[in-house]
Length: 489
Image 1 (cartoon, one colour):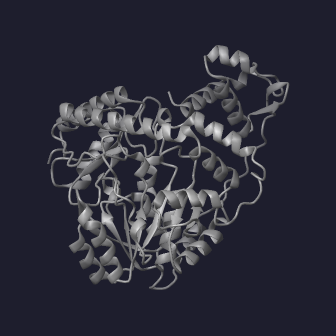
Image 2 (tube, one colour):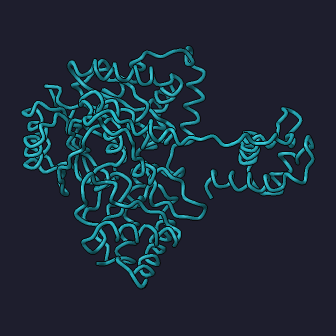
Image 3 (cartoon, rainbow, N blue to C red):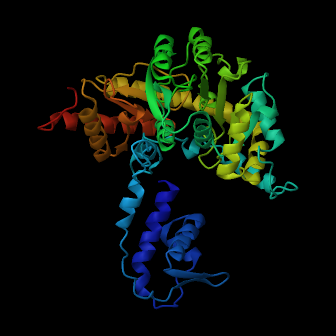
């Protein structure tokens, strides 16, 4: 059971029992609750804190928790209907829509109910996270002299130098800005490089979080089809000519969701095409440290061999460690760096220094290389287990590419209609106890075929993968047997 589920369950039990106590009466001690509910002290502490945050209990250090005094009558509900007019904002015919669709992002961030297999997750399962190393790094970082002071706005010099070394020898610390994770870096880069209303070229399919950021900035994503070797250069060149775009966003290594790696012959070609169009390439190098141990040598980032400053590089430590270690980097050369710096400062001032110090502590210890080696082995084992399970249990589903990095498989559903098949599959899967991500949010135009994305990095291990795929088979068969089934065309 996830810790978050345990806390919610215990808080619910205690909430239902509060009427047994008079206002001001003491609740059972934490030790008694640990023994009664067979929960950890941390779970009990968090459950009590949740009730205190709701105003239902009052905690007194050294004395315990007490039922709070009854609240007064709730104030009458207000009328917020006026906001519809304000948020719609006329702004004239050239106004950029201000609504933001976060559904594609929430599909991978939403926590499923207890007992549901989390094939929709976007981060490492806790068993794959270096929790001990993170805790030790954070403790050491907090004791560093000046750790709680204001950091440089560009980030700690030592951390910027580490990222520069990781990206390639052509970069130095002066070319790097520290960001609050990769998503923040993408948002900064898109706002810096394209004005509202401008087109931005994207791989198709691509990461929904980037599409959401682009649309929130008022940009118009334009799809450029990709295959198992990455973006197709002839279509990229045609898209630049047709749209006049000045930005192309790509994930050359273990692309999300397909897992494709940009072929060697296409790497230089893509950068050349962008350079001739007077455009930037935003390189989202999110999965380099999620490589599997059977991948072989990896190509360097596009930014490592880019003397003209065409490539703006984005990378992060978040995916390979913990969703809460939101430390990333933006790397660029030339005048664009000043614009990136200005937007970064205006938006967030700086990344908190203790988090930067903790990141430095983590990557500077032997535990870091041990974690990367262990993770590489574990991800390969889980990918292999999921691939084998799908072939055995659901041979009708298509897995066109087996990635050597990342944490998910891109799975094609039979049939030609995208929307109905995907929604039926996702709903049937959830009823069977497994959460999966629909493919539709990964496309910025009409999808050519229905897909789902299945994460093998967000689950506890190979046994849970086998159980999750078994549930998928049950869901698939149940949907096919339904009177108005659309699965399978």
